[in-house]
Length: 398
Figure 1 (cartoon, rainbow, N blue to C red):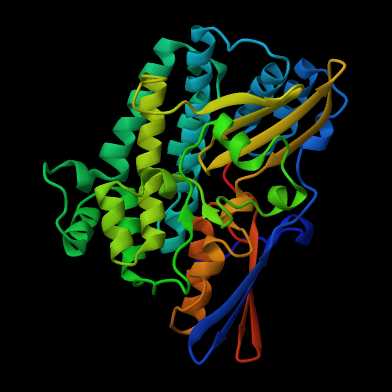
Figure 2: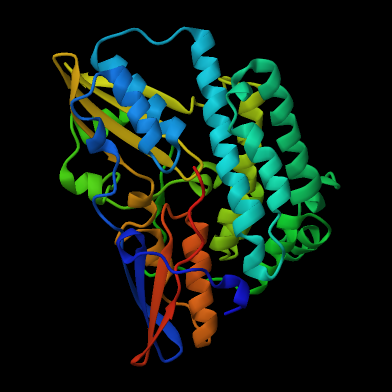
């Protein structure tokens, strides 16, 4: 494990704990535990809707704006109120796109480069972070200009090798050549691909979660989700992966990486595509070819459900109102999908052959690619010998 991969351990109560077993030079089993009881939802119970929205925005560690808008729209739906005016919807879309872009940039500029010995770009991220997080970016003119700058960053600084030629890469060798031709993220991708492809997961890869409306989620889950669904959600009875890979799996270059077994690289490349999509939404919100980032529906009287797409994946929220106040609220976080006990990490953590340190590193990269909401700690049991990797990269601020 390179020194750049080491991070300060965090308190065990706020760490995703991953245990993997290696035997005969192969990873043969993996299990993970996501801390419970960290949801900000209980803090809004008993509050009036406008108070609850402010409280949730203040308490949500990740995607605070997505949480706040989801709760606001869910409460409106539960009260039977009409959708917001178009101008408000456009401002909301720009705001959520900026929040997601900010989270993507933290991963791409700060967290991924040190994994391969490259310097984190703190100054570049800090410059954009201040502007993406500012309320001013919700104005149409400011959002349009800043979205253009983010698009330029993707094309000129992150993936320059893929934008200086007209035709797409024809194969993996051509893809690697483009990655090495320029761009900070391209260099990371080339190094990541060099680690080697993964074997097909035992039992196949988990399904990729498509973008569903709030009404579709209410129809699929019911008026109110079960405790089991909140803790370990499934779609059509099976675990699913949400996030950039699910949104961009049909992109030709993402598909190329998936077909060649480079699923970690595919997730990283999909994140760059998703960043560009966020920038485009900042410039042209609510276009016909892209679903809105947030919507809500009312499956029953006094109940609202909202769906919000964040940088890491889908955020689901249910709220029940009684006498003008919130009687109950539950949130299904992104990590519950991507770090499901039988989900994407569990499936892809096993089957790979390699040396002990390489296996430990690969597990850490897989965890980072699935964008955990919390730091993670990996324990690798190798023929009876245990080795712990300190808590992984802190979660992005989405």
